Image 1 (cartoon, protein in one colour):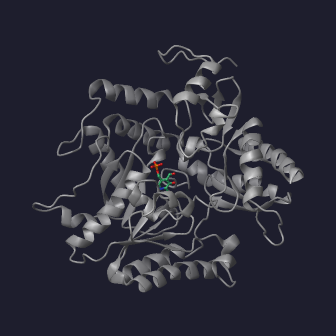
Image 2 (cartoon, rainbow, N blue to C red):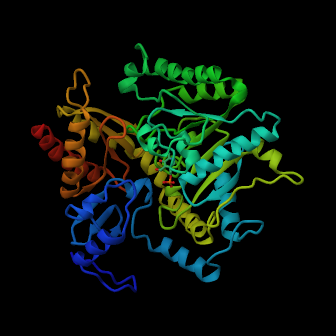
Image 3 (cartoon, protein in one colour):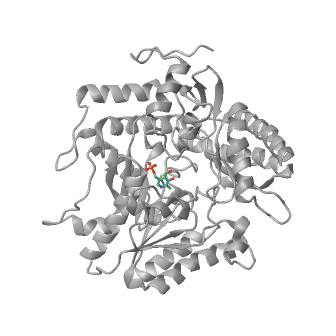
Length: 470
Ligand SMILES: Cc1ncc(COP(=O)(O)O)c(C=O)c1O
């Protein structure tokens, strides 16, 4: 296919020109610049339509990761582009610093309607890290106003990713992402995650999923007691933890966590930067697992990526001390609640409703899972786990012992072979080794069984070859 650059007014550039410009000037995120300075260059994606994307050479791929857990409604939606354009024509920008505009007001109202229980107040940001940062600062400020100024510590889970601002980084549980920035904001403490496949390695001595859930939740109680409840402000948890490869909560986990948070007066923050807006077949992960957080952080799919937006949804209780007199929360972002992004988000939510995307995910998720589970006949596939349209495939060296790859093998397998081989085979997804090596899938919510089969076939071919190279 020939790739059109027609919708933009920029001059069409050749592949070689773009590669040279990227090499000389573009600093990619979380990436080795050497792929450009010493290697073959960077894949340049120029077009998206539905669940397909195209690179600058015209090659087509399945977008198995919805960009980066973002494009839930799929690519190429003209009506989202038009909603943004209409808003930009009418009012391109105005802040929500002591002023407001209709798009942010209407979106806050709509999100409050969708959010569980008394989560009625929306503090907008531009992305997920800022939403987490907001929740962290708000928790500290709230406890100061509530007469418990020592409550400032935060608890999160092993290997969890919560963003890169220095506060959010204190909540992130990946030492490799923090060591170069130490000392990060103090007060972050880590507890076991809900990786049932490796529960034994975290100290769980065996039993059912339910027992594991209670055990893992009780580690939060233990940490609160170790640190002193009077010093702990909040617990940050994703409904399904992404980093490490899709750890859904065992049944009863969040109910037990809620009990513990209530017992010790600790706020429960559900970090739904990935899980909100359909990824799990619900607007919020808290709905998927039936628990009531004190705050929800969101970003990514709220606009399906057609414009950046994030936010923190806050309960009546946490909001209350800020609602009166001279109190204000001294925090904000110039582009938080940007009119164009808010208008796009409203249109995006219309699409979700009109097309029944959440029901589509709930209906098809079991088929997606069983299609991916076919891969467990391969010697390299140790575990397939996840929920909704969000799955991780853990790769192992030995299925029986669950032995994983050492650093060198991981480097050769994931970076040296898998990521590129999957991409070459037509599947954009993520080979992640921030925990044990996993392949992660989180496609647009529009796909169905025939695309699941296509994805499985590509994975089967590449994983079979990966095994033969070990
Ligand atoms: C759970 C979670 N929290 C926070 C973030 C940070 O979001 P952003 O990259 O928009 O700052 C991410 C990003 O993937 C995330 O997955």
